[in-house]
Picture (tube, rainbow, N blue to C red):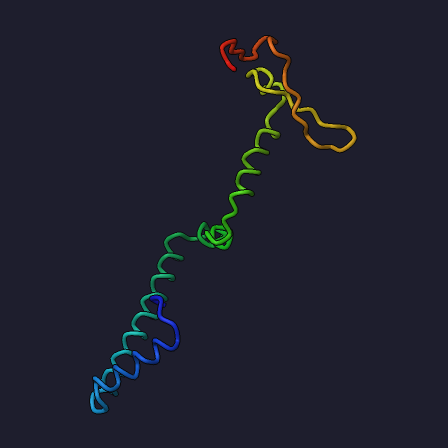
Amino acid sequence: MFGINGGELLVLLVVAAVVIGPERLPGYAEQLGQWVRRARQFVQDTKQRVDEELGEEARSVDWASLDPRKYDPRRIVREALLDDVTKPVSAMAGAGAAVRDPSPATGDWRRSPAPVGAPGTPFDDEAT
């Protein structure tokens, strides 16, 4: 909470109690309690209104999967690269891309490049 650890919070509370004084401290504690109750009620009302307005779509969303703490760039890249595997082989070959053939022994997808100079294969004779 605001970068304050337990010890610092305790010191702040003691300083506040000394500055405010014992006469006014109960009044301020009561005000703080009212603010906390209002904030809780506001959050409850907001959640209820959002649920009512969004309906079933909001209930069916898996919010835990959208947690940024679960962001794994390796998984995202892996999934993006495996999207190519799901495309039809004929569409990939027609576009001049390398063709992927399944290995019968392992079931892995290995990249087998098209021969150089094959029709549809881009060739740059100035490349180094």
